Length: 96
Length: 419
Image (tube, rainbow over all chains, first blue to last red; front, side, top):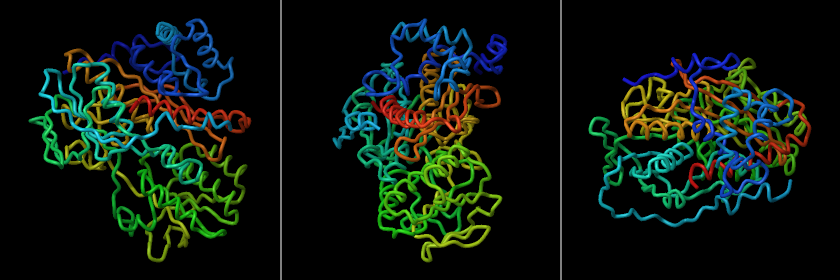
């Protein structure tokens, strides 16, 4: 029988997010790269996020989430993330 | 819209090369077999190999090419060609995934073997089923496989996509197109309504006296307000939606008479697109992972079947709670399943998953909008953490940008799943 980490993780989640387990930054980041793919994916309009400056990414995602920055879609997506997750994502992509 | 945004050629152009099976002796790595080479299966195979290079990953796919349902509505509307939505398996094979073009016909979950139509038997330590959907022929009276040659479903892309396109091209100006939408759950919840928009786009420019009727058993549907807003501003008077309350539930179709019987009455069409009731692809039933309604219950932390151990189900076939049956959902589920499978093969705790879906609809050139969501696993299934649809009354530049993003999304998912 596998241990179910959501019980532990639920206690760690902050007030703004529902009581869900905390995924690793790698698990979250893998979802980003479908739209924000590597150069090889040949995308034209959507910004690349590999090697994106961490401070700027925190500013962008927090701004989208809190309604201070205009967006078509990232305003909706960024509401899923806590400050800690945004920091971790920014560090993850900056280090690529 | 600049052509560079839209041109998908070169990123996913399919080559027709056939792949020979490498005649290698069995290596020592764990064996992962993936059945179904769509967005779910391609992604699962690619990511297991990426996360665990020692694994022997075999992808079993019936067809030599993957013709995507996403963007097939644009072929029907004449905005794209079949070439755009047709992709080969060469790139994923180059990544070390063994691609076998055959059909999985049997699963022995105790001996952990998959048998193929061609006679091959594959051993597995972990099996991923990503079989997509099958139609419940006869689930709607009068609609069987033969009827689909007269009233195309075009809900699996390929010859059916072209058939519907050709029927629209042959239709006289002033004709009536009927779209029969299915009840929930079904593949691609916004698909029928995007299709109505793309057909209207074609008709407006070519046969402007024509009409589109959507018959629907549902009272609400995905991105409904956005679709209605778009229909009204782009195609005033051309598209009529008849929902469940107005008697829009279709009870019978007659391909001979080209009629549709709905609860409100009978209607004749020049082109009739029937999207029939669906269930998980057949191999899921054969493997014993489906429930009484024909879909596959899973543990959202690992995407492993709750009915049969050792088998993971991703994509349209699985019951994914709040996630819609979309290509992006399948892709996201498969990435999480791959991470769980690799952890389990290494004897480690599977990582906590994070799921996402983004689904764009384009209803005219340069007019797109989206639904998106981020999801997590809970003991009660997959739940949405945040998400939503594009704003109503958004400026034209946003609709244009979202249409361009749709093309980038397509490039990205093709790369992530098969590139």
